[in-house]
Structure formats: structure tokens, C-alpha cells
Amino acid sequence: MSKIDLKTKIFLKGHKFKIHIVGDDSRAPALIFVHGGPGIPNRQAVITRLGKTWAKFCTLVTYDQRGCGGGYYGARAEDMTVEQMVEDLDGIVDYTLSTLKAEKVFLLCGSWGTVIGINYIHAHPEKVAAYIGSGQMVNGFQNEDISYEFAMNAAKKAKDEKSIKILESVGPPVRGCYKPVRKGLRMQRQVLSKYGGSTMKKSGVITSALKQLYSREMSVSDKFGALLGYRFSMDTLWEAMIDFDFNRDRINFDAPLYILQGRHDYTTPSPLIEPWYNKISAPVKELVWFEESAHGPLGEEMEKYTNKIREIFAAHGPTDSATE
Image 1 (tube, rainbow, N blue to C red):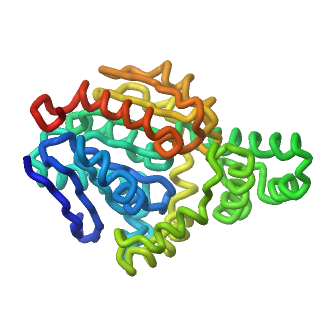
Image 2: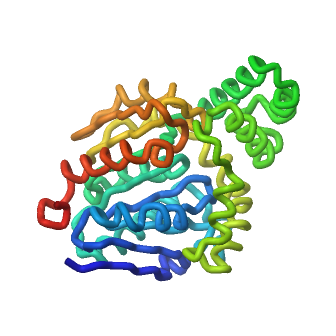
């Protein structure tokens, strides 16, 4: 058994990334977290919430994507593309495989991270033991159309004139974009959250932001990178990253694929999942619904989610004592 707790900077084609690898046994399955946003790093949440529990049965690998957090500094607008994010992930995967002397990694992708992850396993299935997606995105334009409609219908049902006016002022979205794009999205998401389309539990963005602000996981420069990086990532990535349809060209995979989805998710709307999932061809595929969750089933149904992750590791991970 070899414990690992490695927080370091790595350079991929000249760009600096911050990565943290934590595990009680470096032989255990390597699980790379691909965070959402774009521009919302989750390194603090992963390490502080899962570092003492999941690290007992897997090796956690978390990194800040190009343009945010520890990956903010030096990022150029012209490099903020889906293709570059997939290439960056390949560098993170190769670094992980080399560091841990592993043959394959597991990917746990959330929200926008599922766009990176699905494109990654389509290109590099040989490096992936299994893909796990939550807050799964399927079709960018439809994503926003359905999300907006849900928020508007909920506001009208509640006779919430203030929220109705907010939504009318920013939408409906055109080709996945509100007016103005970043501010309009934020205002729509605030109404959506109010009516349970983001989370079934009342926690909120402010609480998450404060935890990150006071976290020891992120340095002062990382925190500034998180604050500045959200705006930068949204402004440079959103219009390009929202223009996709996995129903059209991401249905055949050569790696196992698992979707762990909150039933009440209207941030990345759950009604889009099943039609796409039914088209998928993969060595193994499974769709698991979390009936008491919205966009974040890992946080909302932690025990059930953890048990499912362990099942996936048992099916596709190392067979030695590291997983026992």
C-alpha cells in the first residue's frame, strides 16, 4: 500500500495547470473529476468532501481546467475551445497514468464537464476504464430551451411576477444564448434554482462560493483565478460549447458508459437523457436515476451515489487488494 497526496503544477504545451491527487492506496482505481461551468473548479469540494471517504477505495484526481482557478493565468481566448479542453484532459490522463503507474482511468464528469468527457471517450476509449456522467448534457440548444420553459412555467404557476419579468427580459434563449449571454444565463439559473431545477436542497451558490473562498485547498492566486476565470470562461466558451447535439454524432462508444442523473434536473434537463441513452452502443451502459436529486445527485444522495461508484469500480477496476 502506498498513500498519495500530491498537489502540484504541471505544464501541458506551455500552459500551467493545478492538479491534486489523493488516495490511501495509489493502486486503487484512479478517478479523474472533470468539473462543470464552464469556469467553475471543484477541487476544493472534491478534496474537502471526499478526501477522507472516497480516498479509502479510489485515488481522487482533480484539476482546474484551462481558463479558471489554477489554470486561469496565461489562458488565451483563442485557446478556449472544446477541442482544446479535450486535449488538456488527455494530458491530465497521461500524467495520472504515469504518476500512478495505472493502465486506465475512470472519468467522473459533471454538467459542462460531460461535454469534455463524452468527446474524450469518443476519441480515447483505450485510456478509460469507464465514463461516469452526472448533470449529463445531450443537446446544447435544447438544454436551454427546456430549462427556460421549466423555469417560466414554474414562475407562472406560482404567480411569481418578479421572476416572470426577469425571464422575459433575458429570453427565451436563441441558439442556447440569453440576452446578454452571461448575465442572462445567471438570472435564468437563479429563477430555476428557486423552483428546484438546480437542487432539491436549499443550499445555494453563495454557500458554495464562501466555502471556496475560505478553503485551504486553493491558494490566494487560485481563488482569484476562480473569480476571474468564471467570467473569462463563459465569455470565451459558452457560444461554442453550447452548439452540439450528441444524438447526431456521439452514440457509438468503445468504453463503458454510466449516466447517474438526478430525476429533477432542469439545469441539464433530464427529459433529454433517455432518448439519447437508448441510441447508445457501448460495451456496457447503464442509466441510474436519482429520484430525490436535481443537478447534483452526488451531493443530494451521497450514500446511493457512493455505492454506485463502488459497484462501477468493482466491475471495471483493478482486481487486487487495492479495491478490497
